[in-house]
Length: 202
Image 1 (cartoon, rainbow, N blue to C red):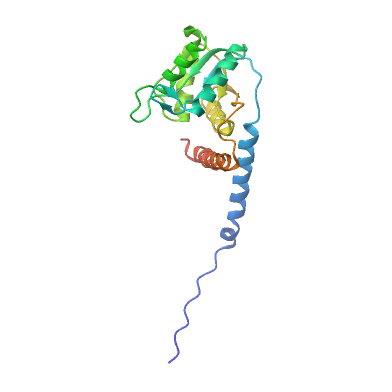
Image 2 (image 1 turned 60 degrees about the horizontal axis):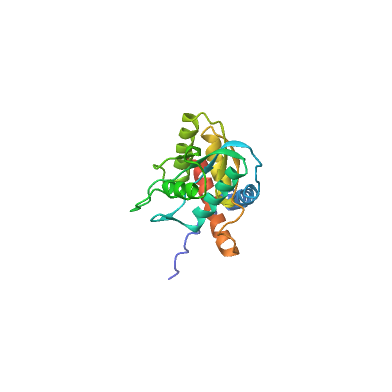
């Protein structure tokens, strides 16, 4: 007895067959833009440097955060900014807010307390930016240099512009993400989160 011939799956519509190509092209374009933006250093001056938060361990800044704080200090010492806005709240189970740790480092480095503004509520980049905007407005500051890792800069600047901040990039000149493996991982992560922000606004 002849076996029934299994039905063939319907072919994918042509548009679906070609869809991966524009998606791949877009992701490559975004990755290239992320890399390029991280190489642009605005000379300033600006009213403030917004130092984006990063992890702390107790009262010690992580290597990534220390790089950001150090660059913020350089911007202040060289007269490129008048104020430091240090962002970052309390991580899970943390005894110190990220911004509090950064303020301690800045004061020990000789920055006067009146030149430092902090917030202790934010947990994400978008929240860092929102809290920094609140401090800018409250202190009548109108422009800022955003301090973060080079590959983080495009997303941070997009969020800052969307928040109404006149912002420019001041990526850290040094970064932990130097090896091909670590840099690629960070780049892929940023490409994902940048597109997620474009789609969802979060």
